[in-house]
Each structure stands twice: as structure tokens, then as C-alpha cells.
Amino acid sequence: MKAEIKGGTAFSYLDIEMAPGDVLITESGAMSSMDADLQMKAILNGGLIKGLLRKYLGGESLFLGHYTNASAGSRRITVTQATPGQIREIELAEGESLYMQAGAFVACTESVKLGLSFAGIIPMIAREGLFRLEVTGPGKVWYGAYGALLDKEVVGEYIVDTSHLVAYDKNIKIKLQFAGGIFSSLFGGEGLVMRLEGQGRAVIQSRS
Image 1 (cartoon, rainbow, N blue to C red):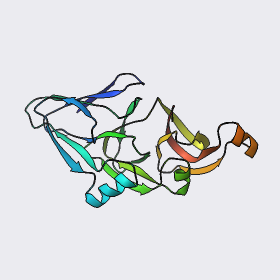
Image 2 (cartoon, helix red, strand yellow):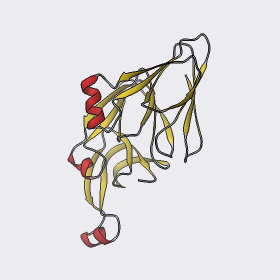
Image 3 (cartoon, rainbow, N blue to C red):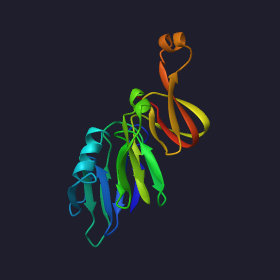
Image 4 (cartoon, one colour):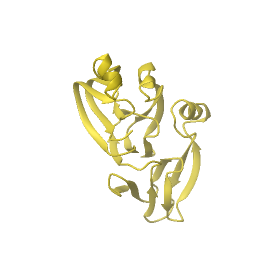
């Protein structure tokens, strides 16, 4: 499977070439066009119970798109995300996991496991959600958000405004605090912010 991200950072989309036998899993409604002989079916997002939890607690769709190339040659499919912004590709190793905010998932290869984990009260207050999507390798994952995606390697501590965190490694912890003193936080326009603690990668969206 070969994927190319096109459209720039403002209106990214995926142009994917599927080899014979390839399977692609997408967020519901992400397909914008495809070759006519690709096979498509809707599948429950991890079974009925897990799918319902992801939908109502994690902000994800109850169903996923399942696309298979059962032909003898390569076939193409175009995949988009619901909001204008950037799409990224990441390849996860066996057992490697990444947390994502609700709505960030776009597509993945069949080998990737999609799960849901409790994020805690702090992310909920920070408008990141009470639960978070957990993607686990091996395989490729495509994800996106509103605006451009900014990479940050967290070493120690780093401050991120609420509702701007898109994805982060499992060993990063989140705390909530005022942006500055009480007066500055209330009247300076920032209010509450998230303090990321630990070591690992974090992906931030430029717009909220």
C-alpha cells in the first residue's frame, strides 16, 4: 500500500494506491472517491459494545469503512477528513501506542488496533474529552486536525493551550493549571492551559 498526502496543510487528503489483497480501514464517511471495483463494507468499530463506547465516550464513529482490493491489479482510493487542515502519517511498531483526541483518526492499515482508554477528569476540563482513542501497532495510521499540525518533543515540561492537543505518547502525563497568575489568566485571554510532563512526542493543532 502506497499513500501520498496531497492538498497542502490547509486541505490535506490521502491518495492511496492499494495493491492486490490490501485492506484499508477508514473513519466513517472519509472516502471521497475510489476505483469502482474496490470492495467496501461497513464494520463495527471493535464490536457493538466497544463501538458504542467509542461513539458516545470517545467521540468516534460507531462504524468504520473497510476497503479491500480483491482485483488482480493496483487500485486507488481518495480519503479526506471532516475538517480543513493537515493530515499526517505515522508508522507504529509492534505494541507501540499513541493517544489521539476525538475526531483525529482518519485511516489505518488492517493490522492496527483501535482502542479506547480513560483520559481522566483533567483532559475533560481542558476540552480534550473524558476518553481518548488509543491506536496500537504494528501498522500505519493517518490522522489529522483543524489547522496545521505542529510537532513537539517533550522533555520535562511543556505548556499547551486547551483543545489544541491532537496526539501524544503514552508516557506523557497531563496537568491543568492557570496560564499565569489568576488576574493574568482571567483577563489575558488564555485562562486554563495543560502542562505536559514526561518525555515523548506531542502533536499540537494550530487552530482550535
